[in-house]
Length: 432
Image (cartoon, rainbow, N blue to C red; front, side, top):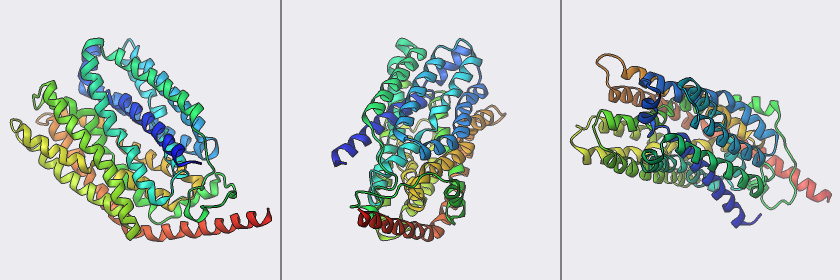
C-alpha cells in the first residue's frame, strides 16, 4: 500500500466528513428560517436536534458491530447514500411533524464515523494517529463554516429547502467515490509489532473480545467523560447562531465574521490538539489525555468569560470566543486515539461506537434542555448556554483526570497482545 494512496483515502474521508458535517450543522444557521416556516417555538425546534441525536445514539452500537464484522468501506458508502436520501426527505417535508421525523432520520448516518477511524487506524500506526484524527476532526468546525456560508449565501436566495437538496446530492456523490475508490485493509496491519509482515493472522469480531473492553481500567472514565464532554459542542452548534441574532443583536455580517474566525481557530485547534497529543505520547503514555484535560478546562474558563462580555464590546467578545474555540476540539482526536491505543483492532469500531453512543445519550438532550431553559421566566438563552456548557465541561474534565491516572496499564496490555500476534505472524512466515 503506497503512502500516496493512504493519504488519498484520508482526503476522501475528509471530504465525506466535511460535507456531512456541513449538512448536519447547517440546521443551526437556518434555525430562524425553519422556525418561521413551521411557526414553532424554541422548544419545538430543540426537539428537531434532539431527535437526530437520539436516533444516532441508538444506532451507534449497530454500526460499530457491522464495521468490525464486515467490509468497512462498503458500509461507509452506504452511510453516504443514506445521508443524501434522508436530507432530501427533510427538504421536501410539508409540515413540522414530517420535518421532525425526516430530520430525526438523518441520525441514521450520523453514527457512521467509527468505521472511518477504525479503517484509518489500519492505514496509520499509533505515532501518527493523533495528527490524522486531528485532520479528520477539523471537518466539524470547517463543516459548520461551510454550512454558515451556504446558509448566508444561498439560504436567502434559494430558500432553506433548496440548500438541503444541494447537500443531500453531495452525499450521493461522495458515496459513489467511497464505493469505487476506497479499499479495506487487514485489521491490525499498521500496528508497530506487525510492520514488515506480508501475512498476518486474521482476527475477526468476537463477543468475548468486545466484552473484554469493559474490563479495561481506563475505559469507564473515558466513556463517562464523553457523556458530558459533547454537551457544549452540540449546544453551541445548534443555538449559538440564534443567540447572536436575538440576544446580542448582531447582524449577519458581524455573525459571519465572529463565527468564521472562531471556526477557523477551532479547526486549527483540532489538528494542534492531535499533534500535541502525539508529541507528548512519545514522552509519556499519559500524554494524549493530558492534552485533552488542558483543552477541557481552558474551554470552560474561556467560554464563561466570553458569554459575560457586554454586547457592545464586539471585539473583546470575538477574541474570547476564538480563544474558546481553540481548545474546544483539543480532546477529540486524543480520546479517539487513546481508545485505539487500548483496544484490539477487531473491536475498535465497537469501542468507538460505544464511546459515541454514550456521548450521544448526553448530547441528545442538550438542544432540548437549553431550548426549554431559555423559555423559563427570568432565564435567557445566554444563561441556558452558560449553565449547561460550563457545568458539563467541568464534569468531563474530572473524569479525564481519572483516565490519565489509569491509562498506562491498558496501553501496555495491548502492546503485549500485539507482540503475541507478531509471534503468530512469524510462525506463518516460517511455515511458508
